[in-house]
Image 1 (cartoon, rainbow, N blue to C red):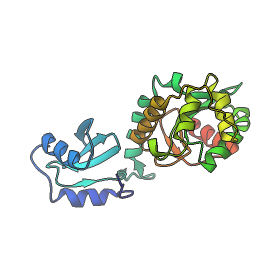
Image 2 (image 1 turned 45 degrees about the horizontal axis):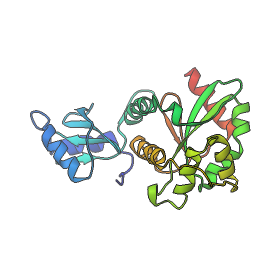
Image 3 (image 1 turned 90 degrees about the vertical axis):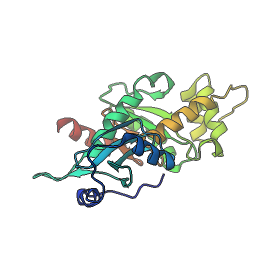
Image 4 (image 1 turned 120 degrees about the vertical axis):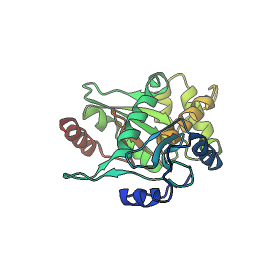
Length: 242
């Protein structure tokens, strides 16, 4: 689904003027979302009167009580200090919950003196993913453990789908990942795990991944794109103090 971009609170207020009803019509909301190819997993009141926070497999949508109007974007609360991204806060919590129990399916490069753990949705055909991978020693040296989940950007249609399936099916997935990233992977005799790769791909979509690498912090916050080790460590230290 194409997201319209970041949405200001004023836009939500303007739309609700046309759509406030006595109570939310969940059936109508579900029907309208279904027509868009989305399946709501929860519907709850949003901070904006007449609008509801609808969690779907493609993120959060804000929908009017009667389902006729929706906003696909981020909702901010205007505070005296600085605007607070309420959507990002909610998505972080949802993302953290989604990663629970996934540890055994991840390819992990542990830091000896671990301070932080970052989960990365990766694609072996992605240039910045290869750059990140080449700097794994630097991340580990900075106390950052890197955990991989698969995200072939074209899903099953990706040209490297078989390669990624072989990595997750290898006896030593970390070694296979190293070989794939430098173009020397031999898939002979490997039982591919395309099921796991697609599971991770759909998980990434549900968490809002649109490109790779996508980094997910321990609190569920997502950082799109490559982050140098030193910069990431500095950001994580700053976040830990806040």
